[in-house]
Length: 122
Image (cartoon, rainbow, N blue to C red; front, side):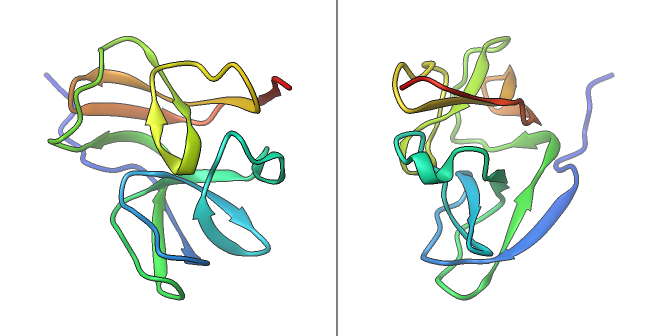
C-alpha cells in the first residue's frame, strides 16, 4: 500500500519577501526568504519547503519532514534533492557555496523531506 499522506509537520513563519511555493525557505532574522546555496548567510538556516506561494509579510507554511507531492514535479526516483539557488530544489549537487540535502525523490511527483546537515563547499 502506498503512502497517501500529502504533508508532514508544518511550521509557520512570516514571509520576509514574496515567496514561491515548493521552494526551500531559510529563516533570516526571523523572516522567511528563499534559501540560497550561494549566500553564506543562509548556511544552516533552511527550515523547510514552502507549501504554497505567499506575499511579503503574510504567513508562510513550511513542511519540515515527510512526504510532499506536487503534480508539476518530474524528479528521478531514488536520488537526493538539494537546496539550490533562490530556493530552487535540484537533484544536481552544488559544487560551490554550501550543500544541504533536503529530501529524496520517492517518485517523479513525490519527495520525502528530511533535512540533512549542511556542508561548506567554498
